[in-house]
Image (cartoon, rainbow, N blue to C red):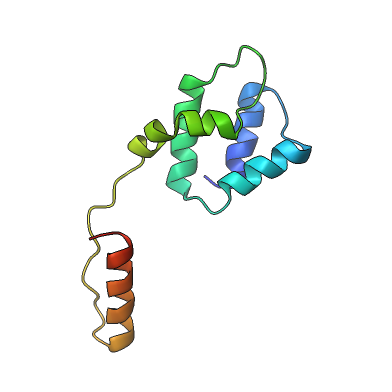
Length: 102
């Protein structure tokens, strides 16, 4: 799922369109998130944010449910050792390993 697909899903499910500053805020908040984050957000918010009022969820609703969203995302187990044994690939692997605290 992409950002555009997530917003379209919310619009179709909740019956309101994102527009103006609201669309800008949602796009900025969700920009560059992973596909897994978008899927988890959709799955959690359909359970936690009611369709009763016909309003699409905003940043506040995502933030309110963020811990559950993150908990439902697949967990990365470990980074494999690099196949190529050159200085550049090993340096990149070490950088990634440090970034993800493995």
